[in-house]
Image (tube, helix red, strand yellow):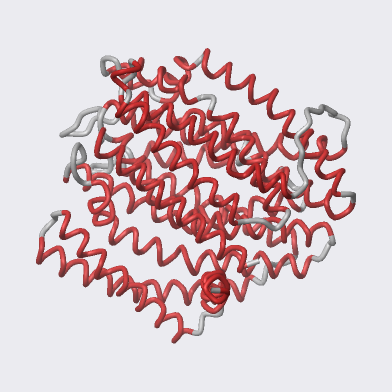
Length: 533
């Protein structure tokens, strides 16, 4: 399982790097401007519904049911289930796309009412939302394809599909918006929006050959009486409600962000700073949380089908321990080096030093919740594999109150501003992890909690040692070179290798078991690949 996670991590790393390239281009051309704020919101609206109906609820419900069908029935029956779900997606999500395009204006008002205070900002966001909404349909189908391939033991191809999305969105956006924009009569930002749709199509098309080789042939078919379809729908109901709570939190935070007036930038800036900062959060979240969760879910589903609780507990404990080993030091690194990371990647063109500072502040608060975010990627699907979709739903719904109270209090504190929204997001993630872990531990009669606690304390200690070394080196470099782009790059070139070496040495001294698993998981695919050569 961890070898699969290692291969997935490599693929996800490529995806996140190409995603950073896309964000660099956006920063160069648009900075933290009205156009980028509108683009961020226009992209976020179909993304909200994607998380709600596709990659969130659908993946969590579909993979366990499909895995069970593969184990207990014929492969033909399992592939028929894929067709039934795909046809249903065409109909349901197609209606959602049309509805979203028609009602784009009130949705923009609901998410960012403050945009109406800036002339033309609301209208631009509505226009971009309508362009990008069809992205929802293709990415829903891509998410189902990913679930099928993961259940069949194929992880690298679906993990690389996000890389194809990034390349397609960048290439399509540059061609349509930057090079051909004046000729075809669209603005640069509209061209980038069309690029998103093209990238989504490429993400789906990349996985089709692997599905074909696995024996899948699409045939439109509807049968709501099929037991598998009915179980997926039963699981998706609470999952949609649970994910709706997450989307409500996003709506609340976006509304607060659109109403924040920065002393220097006014209404333009907070939405963009939060978006740029969260892009960096997605690198370790994808490399570690998503990769391990993708490899864990089919294994957990098989253990659940076989009612093998001891192996299920061991798998969950080791997976969460592995996530902590990789994300806790990442949180420390993002907090201490956040400004240098933002500055070295984004600063330049329309993105200036002030933008770097503000996005770096947001990143440091987002980083606090990284371990909680990543662990939830493992725990939530585990509930679905056990047939319990109610608990994640209740935890998510309760997070609405947690988030609203946290934002309302923090945003009033002097000097917080947009950072309050990043902090509340982290608090919600940590709250969700803690509650889900305790409930799952009670439900399963333990998850090797003592071993996990011991490992976590040792990982925290090693991370603190690493943090001290990184803080010292970063302070010396920035004191010597200032806050230029060269200084930021030098800081990263010195502090990241130093931190990695110190953390590795501290883990060795503290005898953290998960270290060997992590090294084997990450290096295994590389050894096999180069060994064959």
